[in-house]
Image (tube, rainbow, N blue to C red; front, side):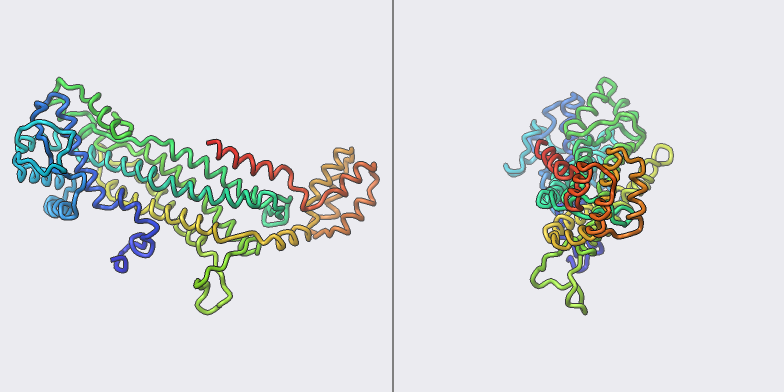
Length: 470
């Protein structure tokens, strides 16, 4: 089956992304909506709109919808060309087939009580609702549950891999580059810690997001429900029903839920991915420059013709998949806030790609974490490169001279270093030539590219400590 899949997420990459099928496959969407319709029947029974004992002790046991039942719904949809009406017809038939005969004991739902024949319940299926009442709840639940059960654990694993790397190299001096040119030294661990802090802020936003859903009827005014049963507090009913799914009710809607709330979640996800594109490109460059070495994995091949190659494929794969995901996330931000009048259907097909977007995101996160387990610092190369550029301590030297009262400190160093590589011996000679007090001269001599890393180590420790406290 995977060999014939149209999408690589269900083919080449199914091992990495199949966990999302539980939330975003067509089957998962059908199952979720069937169960919401049944939950709605139970919720109606609590309002007094029909006697509580009108519900049978059983209902079709569809918490475990079968493939055959899902295909039956699809057969209805081929006729109706309406997905939710197909679910309504399917449920009608299940009630008619049952006709009050008890199902097997393991199929009994403890949520529903009474002895009346199931046939009496048919008029109440999808009572007073519009399709988007069911769809918005189903998709909000899918977004929430996939976040909690799949995405956040994957992101935590990724952050953990970065933390391990940052701790290992927290004190390893590294030649920094600004504008691509040698700059003030840093440590390898601190540069990774910058990304840890950025990604963790996004993680907090993602985890704290509260998803909205609607249950407000065809144009958002509870028209049908209010007309049929004006004595019921439908606003309170809506709030309670949606809150039971740990979702936030939106009471001011058209036929569709305004997607602003979902877009805020997608924007946080897009920022997370954008940061990780930056990260993947930096790691790629470190590998290219020989700062990082890739571990050799037995049996793997880097090139069909160049046997020496070990390619940074995990980070390249991640960069590509993050780009695809963010292209779709950008489209959501452009398309989903816009709907003609009370609604048009152009949002529906876009919403069916949520699983695709999250699949490319998950695949990228998985690849970055795997890539980090396969790289290590080339400490000799890093130190050699750093010690070849003594000009990078000119910032420190001119600042020390300023503190000693030299007004020409910057210009003095500029003439020695701008556009030049400064060796240690030349730096020492320059220090000896200065007209400064002995303490200042000693401070200048104590400088070196390896020691001039500021508070980098403490900053790494602070980031890791903050994460551990949370």
